[in-house]
Length: 481
Ligand code: 6PG
Image (cartoon, rainbow, N blue to C red; front, side):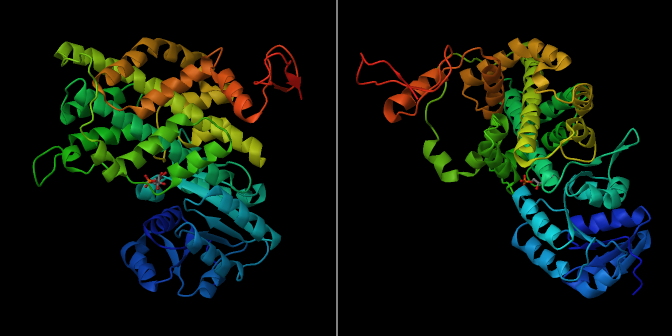
């Protein structure tokens, strides 16, 4: 076989197949490989006319079909299957060749694999790809890790197949080794937060304001005309407007209320804990999914008393005013959730030695990915204007909007609390905001408690050094350690 393929894709599940087609549609010759050859044939039968494909039955033939430096994209399940495929191909490749993992791998695995392959002269590129199957085919957002050298060769191809906004590709070299997969993981954490915030807004509009799912679909559509404009809001309206064909009931009333996850939200929260990064809105969104799936735990608590305060039904005009408050609450909470994601990225960059352009992260999330949203353009502008900005919450325009949201945001939570409607993500976002802006936190008491029972010591506001109080000897002065 001629070594004429620009790129090879192994693992032709729906994501791999669509990426291969996307490359081919952009004029690249694509070598194809799958463990079971029937998938390769199926792709060729159905989509062979879309471009130039070179099918290979064996890993050896596949590698032989690739131009050098060889670009092997693996699209297999994260974890052990990815390691097995890497081991198989690494033996067949030569120095300078590259393996690209386009799956949702854990960034620590990507760091480990990158080191191991670098020692063998191979480039390992962990590329986070967002946008689901539709994005993979028509233009995803691609968060690329690995060496700058590998990006120089690979980047133009990935940029060509990615989504585009105003002529700018939604693909960038995020940073070395696991940086691309890290940023993809945080993308998914934010995705969990966005989805949970929307679900809580729906719950409030339904059970506090008394709107039907199809009315809430219309409210979401009107929100989507403004600053909350996003893909997730758009599809939430579609889901709420959907009627179950079997029963004629709203779709959301026939679907079990137990949300699953494949694990990227959990990884985000685990990493946030490791880095002491207070990603509380993302964490609450992830726990909310866990709690929703705990059937026994939930059924054993069902029927416990809730609100006893008066929460009479809202009139139509009160409901309309409430919907506008929910819009403020949703928007302010969204800024907090995204800001927590950016804080995590900054914390991880410091911990793992990555240099990450925060404006570029916002730029490549504007289209192609699941959290694409109009306001990301403003986030991009804010980080471009001040690359070392610590927080979105203090940026002039966002700060102004959050200031305007104060009353409606808090009123929304009051309404939820009075009616006993759980709003863990909205509440976590407000608590995060109040925590960060507080001049004093009650944690001095915690330091006292720790010193009392465990001599864990504390620092003072007025003197340098570390201190311990002799709690059982009132007359003895504290010790300076
Ligand atoms: C994307 C998505 C995609 C997927 C995740 C989350 O960016 O295209 O994030 O990666 O939807 O697997 O799915 P779970 O909700 O099952 O964790």
